[in-house]
Image (cartoon, rainbow, N blue to C red; front, side):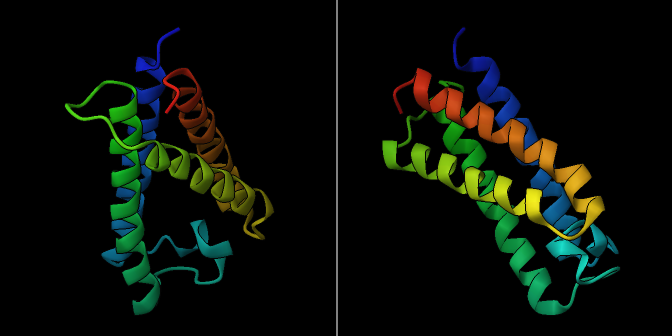
Length: 127
């Protein structure tokens, strides 16, 4: 199996998560689905700013994995590919231990799929 399909899966899930973070940043009342459900409804301004940063980071990570999988016109450095895998591993742990059942049900499968796809791309491409 080549890295193309896992790269596409990762990119799609990263875009989905980035859209969610963008919605949070714009004030969507989805707080129970993030940050352990600490802020039900609309997030406070500092957390909305962090969501905007996270949205950008997710898109960058999506481009890194898509690039490593040969789907965009550049090849990222190895440290970026493995850094993306590491960030995803931390994210999986966070979603598995969150006190919010809604967040865990929604994001644990997504973060696990992202970790699997990023790890596959990293190993197959020797990124």
